[in-house]
Image (tube, rainbow over all chains, first blue to last red; front, side, top):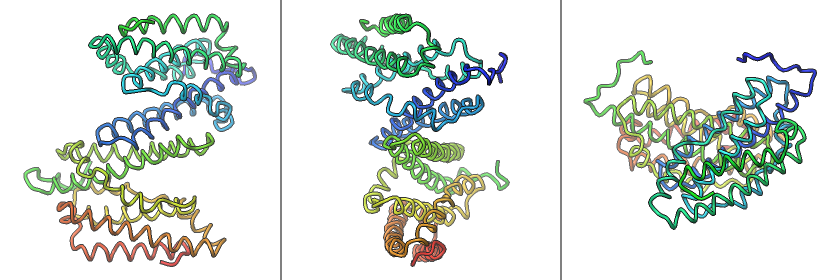
Amino acid sequence: MSSAAPPDRSTGEHADACELLALVAVFELDDVGRFGRDAAEAFDAVPRLALARRAAAAMARCEATLAHLVELGGDPAPAMRDYEGVFDVFDARTEPGGWEEDVLREHLGRSIAEDFCALCSASLDDGTRSVVGAVRHDPASADAVRDAAARDTVLAARLSLWGRRVAGEALVLVQELLADHPALGRLAGDRAEVSRVLTENHASRMRDLGLTP
Amino acid sequence: MSSAAPPDRSTGEHADACELLALVAVFELDDVGRFGRDAAEAFDAVPRLALARRAAAAMARCEATLAHLVELGGDPAPAMRDYEGVFDVFDARTEPGGWEEDVLREHLGRSIAEDFCALCSASLDDGTRSVVGAVRHDPASADAVRDAAARDTVLAARLSLWGRRVAGEALVLVQELLADHPALGRLAGDRAEVSRVLTENHASRMRDLGLTP
């Protein structure tokens, strides 16, 4: 499975990796609930099926993450409980006002999570880097936002502000995670540097979408 | 995949099988939404994970069903749209009043669906019988109801009435399906006989749970 040496169970390397894996599992599990609820509310079989497929894909990533956590000697239930409700404030403060805001929020949120996971997992075992690296944004959603923004400058201006708000809330959440979970703090390194990298990548992503960072 | 001869695409056998497969896909997709929504509302990581797993299992059955529908030359979207909202009345009239009612409703509803699918698919190709046969009740849920009813006679009396109501609504739904979808009517055969078989199996299931049919 892994070309690197397996982590030494007698050190803390493990515990830190398990904390990161639990965060990823909770992140994906949150999406299962979100997409599942959206599927239940969909008014037609085609979007319902598409949303149910996204729920199933998130669940597959959650399962792969938990399987690796168990492999590293972690216990899923208490590890996940440490992050109970961790996305509630972010979700409440970024309630989308329409289809484009929903898609942009999803794209930016996943992209920031992807960057954060890359920063945290750089020094970890191959298995962890691989499952954690599966938190990926969906390129199709970026294309949809880019097209919509290119057609409509008023919409582009609104989405620029929205993107700034989503990223702002995501960065606050990241700093809270680093403060509340020392393991993540150790993995991610200097907090100011984390913010700098995430902000810089976010800005270049916004420009790539034709939006103002 | 199948030991029987593949269905002849020039006859109506196909179209009928596809109508049954679409119903099963809609049934499972409905469960993805239900379990996903319940997962989103769960107050703890452990039940949330369990519910998300049930959503993913329902989605896997939905995918297998749709894959076979496509194999038989069917088109998922219009086929599923023919059943749009088909479970709404049943769901609204069997809103559970608690944990035991929820579990019993799930058990009885799935069991009746299982019987109905067996009746409809008896004359169809192996592939259809196999995917349609995956609509199965969860034996663990039956055990939970049996144990709860054995411990509490007042609860057992309430669940007996509840089971009768759930089965009544399910039988009404089955008759509506047979009336509205001639393909299902052809597959299932005599309507009175369908009701007789479903009612008889339901009664023996209730007795097996320690409940009065």
